[in-house]
Amino acid sequence: MHVEIFHASKFGNGEQVAKELQKVLVSRGAEAEVHHIRDVNPKKLPSADLYVFSSPTRIGKPLRGARRFAAKVRLPAETKYAFFATHGAPRPDKRTGRMPTSEEMAKWQRTTSVMEETFDSIGLIKMADMTFYVTGIRGPLEEGWRSKVASFADRILPP
Ligand SMILES: Cc1cc2nc3c(=O)[nH]c(=O)nc-3n(C[C@H](O)[C@H](O)[C@H](O)COP(=O)(O)O)c2cc1C
Image: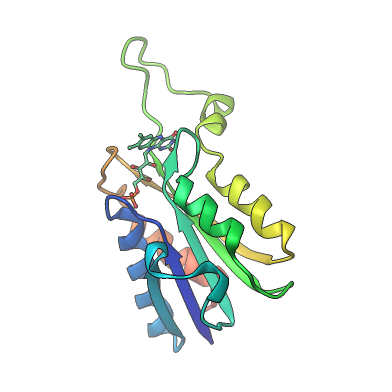
């Protein structure tokens, strides 16, 4: 199994997840490569059995560069993919101490659904998605992220 992983990490957290995922997949006998989207032509992606895409979040949506990249991807219909988003961890309101409701959180967490729409429109098939949280804008990743990567890998390539 050959997996190509594309991330759009700005502060390095998404890149860390991508590299850990690569490590897990390789330990399970797959071949896996990691690329930043800026180094790749979305119209000429290397061939693979499965593609993993990823984006950080800006005002509830994928980074603009990641959206543009996704819109230019040319892959045959029914190609398999997985997606992971990185998000700021939900925090209590500084003034009231109240945690955001699930509706409020959904507003700031549309990264996966926006990307899914784009990939759906060209007929790709989603195998898995996962959300990874950072505790500050620039990180670090929330505790337990490595075991989350392992669960994500389970859905791409069962152990
Ligand atoms: C200007 C700005 C806006 C952001 N807006 C959101 C947001 O709406 N929702 C969210 O979950 N995270 C938001 N974040 C946090 C990012 O998701 C976080 O920085 C990113 O996932 C870290 O990933 P990276 O290290 O791979 O770049 C924002 C960060 C910045 C700098």
